[in-house]
Length: 111
Length: 116
Image 1 (tube, rainbow over the protein chains, first blue to last red):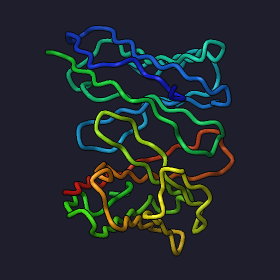
Image 2: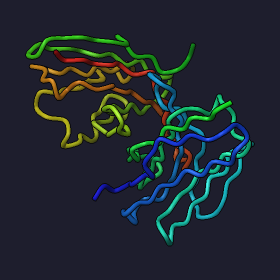
Image 3: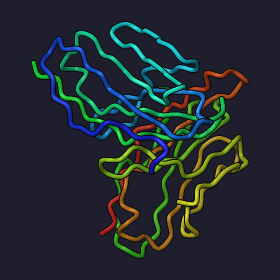
Image 4: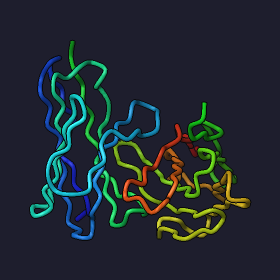
């Protein structure tokens, strides 16, 4: 079993839809949780960074962490074609440590 | 552009050849990470440096792989006697650690390696 499991894709939604992306993890030592977005043939770019359980909102994006269930989510409201990319969840045990990524899910937002 | 840069962006080589990749981190970033990403998978950690010291290596990093960061600035990743299984995107990331919990790793565009 991998330390981080991410819902399989791909996912295709119409423009304006609400998108929910999810990851589960098995290592209780993970304390910091991130979502990265990766466009085709590019490096990942950080979207959201959370530490504690609960919700964090940034524009159309909301990150949710439930440490008791070892479950994290990313919600995208009013999805746009420009949101079409691969979304990777990532976690780390310490403030300054390596990242462990999920497999990634490819999202396509249809105009 | 003051982001992380990687060279070359693409490399095609024949099995058995040696290849070397370079990463230039964001200026003044003291941490530098190498990850490998294969098709349809998330990046996997290979190794990282704090300044010039290599502090951790993954068991993914076989004896054929070596990484250096000689002056605590740029880094190189060398693969000796390449195998077809080495074909992947090699990603470099850098960060500044100042005791803050929000250490953010900034990724470069990657070097895509194809071993024939």
